Image (cartoon, rainbow, N blue to C red; front, side):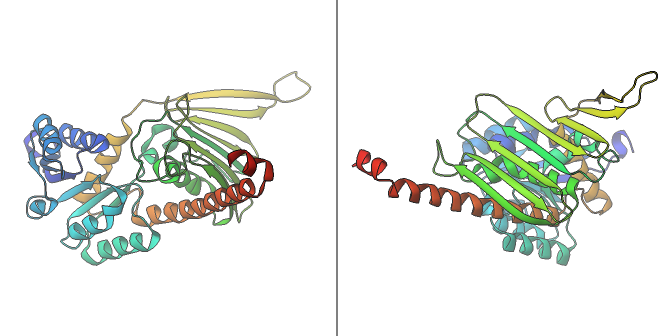
Length: 335
């Protein structure tokens, strides 16, 4: 459908912070969405985002109940459950930013409410919509080792959660889909550096099918890096999230050569705005009443593994502190 025949869904954005303003901007750009309202407890912030998106500002999300068909929830994680239930129980579709909730139990409540009311529940794991990740479909077959790095300079944002829920959860979600197996064991280490929560974490995931993943996330890096490497019996693949490209290396027999050579192929695709693609997909699901690409169950599964990593990090920090407190030289020096 084109032009005036496009049916617009009335949408709202709850949370007008750094990421919320981008949600509002993308809705404004899409012809099948009508941004009815922007909500933030800070009226000035709500008015600022509403002003450049031609929306109405609100400070109470309950004012949207009779004004929207769907919402993006882009608020601190601890509010996802209460806000999400308020809309889902009224049959209003929800795109909730990652992580889906504070705990898997809270995630289950959101999932159950969506099933009960028939509302769409999509979780904001936007890397699923990265063209390079989508292009892995059909290329990844029984990976044996996966290594990912997600490094960012310190920004001072999202300090209500640790780096596992802030950054690493994106890679957890991707890796769970690539490995396609249950996680058998989790080992993790991490330390707080500039906040009171872990700012750099490394985790090792062992899957029941034999695949192993090594995952590193840092929000105190000097450089910005978004990369995942996948090793399988017939190929080695490197995905650069930022450049949105894939490098595939394979052993191939070359004519007149005594042994096979490693041939590298760089696969470039049309660059896309991953957040915009995510929101477009959400709106399509709302219109067609279809299952979202990233379901509530997907969000819960990633959160469950994230919590196992957090537990490992907590144990490693406690062990380190116990070692330091028990070391006479360190104890005497700090006295």
